[in-house]
Structures are given as structure tokens and as C-alpha cells.
Length: 257
Image (cartoon, rainbow, N blue to C red; front, side):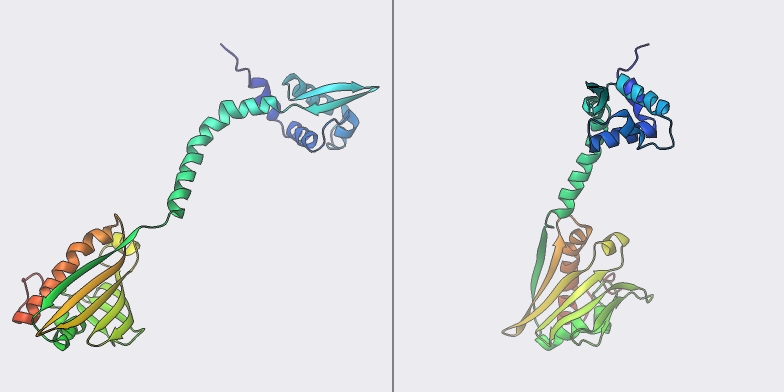
């Protein structure tokens, strides 16, 4: 059986008294036996000598004579070899993972806006009512009813037919019937809910006999579940709104809930 050459080092370092002696030599090298005994007052002089012999056998300390005194000096090389042999290779994957996590967390989050525009053959007041009236949204907004006092700073909710909250938010800016800016926090999916709220702006512009409606969803994170669902979801909602306003009927039975 091959004996690991580092065994004497591990054996020497296994004792707390020997580790303390090394710490004191690290603080002040070249101490005598009498000086080192002061650091272990409950131990006999012979006991300290035995510990020093183990440390010297492991090559963790060296000695030199100065007249009648023997000075003990720290030799850090075996500890460095032990680090290189046993510690660094195991620590490196952990350190690498932590470094990668640090880079990921500190990297700027890449966000983008989703913009969708549609022309609706109706005046802005009619389109505005479709956006802010719960009885209207229930017919095209996946069956949910919007509710708010529609004042700046007021909360808003989108409730499912069973009364549970599908999404909520707050009115950030409002100028009827031209502009509504609000926060929107989806609650229908735990994963999407965990990603946090986004911001939505509904902008209405008169275009002759029609109204141009532009819905901008801001703060979507690249690769997020929110971004994946909102892209198609907003198109479906706005298309359903347009159909309802222009024909008086829901786009599909599912849109009406």
C-alpha cells in the first residue's frame, strides 16, 4: 500500500494545539520554546516539545540555533502543496459556479417592448369604453372583467368569471379617451407571476373615421415566459376588441368566456 506523502502534514494539522502553534509562528516567526509555551499555558513544557517534534517531522516548521537558543520558524510549503493537491481542485468548480452566478446576477437584464397597432372603425370614446368597462372586457379579454376607478394611482384588477384574480396592477397615467398607462402583474400562472409585473400603454389616435389603437408592453425580459405568452396574447386581445367594437359580437366563443 502506498502511503500518501501528505499524510504527516494532515496528521500534524489534525491537532488544535499544533494548529495554534502554527498560527502564533505565522504572527511572529522565530520564537523559542519558552515563548511558544506561553501560548499553551495549560500544557507542560514537554508536551509543547512533543507537538513541535510532530510539526518538524511534517516539515511544517524548521529550527535554527542562535547561541544557546533554538528558534522555531514556519515553513508554509507543505501547506501550499496540500492546498494545490487537495483543496484547489475541489474548490475550483464551486468558485467557478459562484463566479458564473455573480456574472449572471450583475449582468444587465435585456428587456424589450412589444408593440401592436390596429385600426378600429369606431370613435375613440367607443374604443375607450371597450378597454375600461368590465362588461366589455368580459366579451374579448379571455372572459375577465376589468375593474378600477380609473384615477391616477388607483388599483385595477382583471377577474375571472369565478371571481379569482387573473391579473392586477395600478393606473400609472390616464387621459381619457387618448392614453392609459398601467402596471400589469399576471396571476394566472405561478411561473409568470414570479417574473413580476410589466407596464402597458394603451394609446388611441383619431385617424379619420377610425381610431388607431396601439398597445405597448414594456419591460419584457428576453427568454421569459411572460414574453412568450404576451406576444400572441396581446394580438388576440386587441383583435377581439376590434371585432367586438365593429360588429357587436365576440370574435370567438372562447373569447367571451
